[in-house]
Length: 239
Length: 146
Image 1 (cartoon, rainbow over the protein chains, first blue to last red):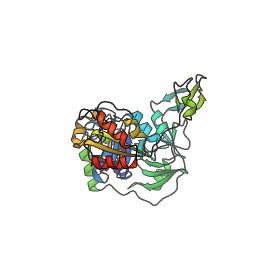
Image 2 (cartoon, helix red, strand yellow):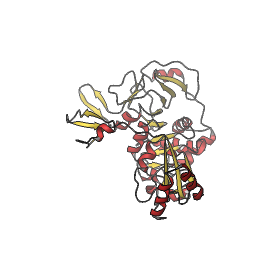
Image 3 (cartoon, each protein chain N blue to C red):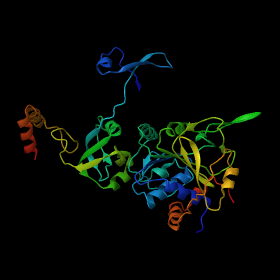
Image 4 (cartoon, each protein chain N blue to C red):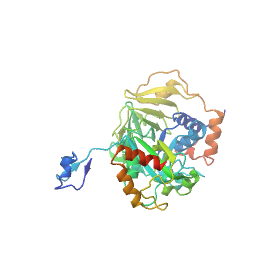
C-alpha cells in the first residue's frame, strides 16, 4: 500500500477515536480535522465533532488551510461556541481534544508559549491558553506533531503551557502513550527503528517491539476523499 | 464560583451561599456552588430523532438546564428532519449529544403555553391546580388527559 507520512498519522489518529466520543479540533489542526472526519466515516459514525468554528458535526464541502473558518461550520447541526466547549470539558464530558506543543517533555507537559534563546529575544508563540484549560480535564489529549526531533521532544519544557495525564502522542516516527507516569513509547511506525526514535528524542524511551499497523487501503481512500486538496500535508517538511 | 450582586440580600444565607474575597479587588463577593440536576425534562417546539432541539421565543432556564443536567429528557411538539437543523444551525438550542431521550408529544406543554402552537389555557391551569389538592384529583386529571 502506497501512503504518505501524513496519511499514516491521520489513520493512527483516527483509530484513537471511538464511536460516540466527543472530539474537539482547534485552530491550525488540519491533520486532526482529517482524522476526525475519517473516523466518523470509517468506524465512528456517532462520534461528535466539536470544531472551533462553533460547530457540531459539520459536513464541510471542502477543506482549506484554516481550521477555524466557516468551512468547518458548514451544515453543522448546532452552533456551539468555544466557551461552551470549555464548559463541557470542565464538566468532564469532553472525551478527546487534539492539541500540540512546540516542546513536549518526558512527563507529558507541553510548551506552546515561549522558547528562551541565550543572548537573543525569546521566541514568543501565540496561543496555548485553550490547551492549559483543556489538557488537564479532557479524558484523552491527543498530541500530534509534524516533526519528531530532540528540539521538540525535550527532557523538560522551558515553560509549561499545559500538563495532562491521559492521552497519546502521534509523530512521524511513533505513537506514544501519555499516563500519570509520563510518556511511554507504544509503537514505532513501519520502516522506523527504535534506535531512530530514541536518537530523535532527548529523554530515554522504553524499548518496544510493537509496530504501528500500516494504514489500510480503506483508511487511505477515506483520507484522500475527505481531503482532495491535501491540507493534511501542511506543516510537514516537503520532500 | 463567584458572582456579582447579592450585596445586602438575605438570600445569601437562606440559599447557603458563601462569601469570598476577590483576590483582584479585595471586595467581598458571593460564591455559588455548581448545580448539577440528575435530570432535566424540557418541552421544545421542534426536535429531530437524535435529540437536536429548537426552542423558539422565551428560553427561560432551558438551555442552561440542558447543559447542567446529567440526563436530559425532551418532549417536542413535533419531530422534524435533521436536515432542518443543518439548514439553520444557529437556530439549534440544544445539541443532540447532551440529550438522553426524545419523544414527540403534541400539546406537551398544555395547559401552559407553547408559542406559536397554543397560548396559556387559564381555565386548564385552574383545573390542574385543583386536581393537585388530592390523590384522587391527580388520578382523575391524568385519566382525563388520556
